[in-house]
Length: 277
Ligand code: PT1
Image (cartoon, rainbow, N blue to C red):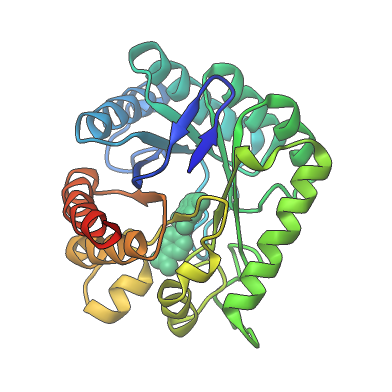
């Protein structure tokens, strides 16, 4: 399985690790925008050294209850970080955004994947993504980040996620984004309760068809709920979730803890290789 970026094909026959880089002002230091930018670039390069094939750069939190960030603020956060990483590394750069103007500026600065939790449903996003020539990740979300965890409800969560993603693939194709440029994501924690999340994980193989799947469960509340751990204590649970996703066919695993996940996936793939042989 391959994914077409604007400038090359990426081999996804084995799952790749996407390292998470949050570009949000540090509440503990007061160094301003320059310090925030420098810290995020250093963090991204650290994740590359740990084995991340991709880094996902985000300037607006989409976790449950998060506040929106203005377009100007998001641009000021992510564009210098993407340009700084691009100047120092040829790692695949993903931009985690839903705003068309941020997508366009991020691609101009060197991003090769648009990771949109709204699956390009914001006005203008499909057109900008199509014109950019980069790859896109389409994620399922029920509701919107501020309120999505209030009462998530499905008759059949797997079927509804699959249908939504198929519809977004069709919208992309109509807009001129070829299937070879599309990654799909069930959106763990985005308008889903604990049972919905683990049902999606258990049946991830049913969503894994011709298009590559991305799974993002790192440190999320679904891990906290079953381990009883706070954010800092979720490494082992997150690594287990990454392994389970890879066994079910996920091709991109989005994580905070890159080094541990890379090792766990090496062990996973060594086993899967013999299963197929
Ligand atoms: C994700 C993802 C993302 N998650 C993609 N992009 C976040 N493609 C940001 C919780 O339950 O899964 N896929 N971008 C982070 N969002 C959340 C959601 C963080 C839920 C935490 C939770 O704790």
